[in-house]
Length: 275
Image (cartoon, helix red, strand yellow):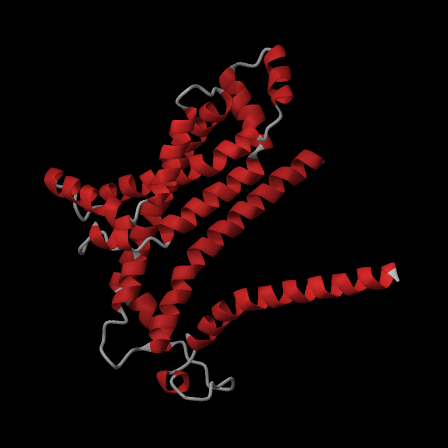
């Protein structure tokens, strides 16, 4: 009787996982499918699964200078912000996790409270600052603003990861003559690498999809890809659904590629350690 119940539980669990995976993948697949359709095939009452594919929507998106400029701005701003978040956030998180003091709790609460604030509360003061110093609508202003987000997110997620590293390993490294910096680079980082990679990936996706802050800190020169994609829908009743779906596909590719590169790098590192 027990094996029968176990088998039934496995079937139910796999069914639930398959349904959840389908619900996650279906919108992406449908968007990619619609990007290959003409507008007439999209706005029909009955969805058409059989149609003549066209690449005009993708060509239109790739051929627009504003889209390529937005893609460039997004890649540079998000990439630099994540790099700054890693260089500053990880050592700060390790210091809070391993060398706590009476301000450690306040620091963690402050870092977490940055995510409680609505984007407008962050964007308006920064917009005034960038206007006064002449950096409004520039990539440096966007990079610094995004860095505030990546540093806070990476610290928030990295502190528990470093706290989970066994202290005995670090104490043994100190006995072997390692200094504090060597313990951080050679012991703590490799042991907590899985969780830290997730923190870096989450911070990249967070700033890549940021819309309101980028909208308030740019007007023409520093527009990111989410802003440019939203402008394609401002055409009244004649909404180019195929072009919009193609822009969503383009907007989704860099995070997916970034996650794929990170996961591949992580798998290769752990494969080398096992061998």
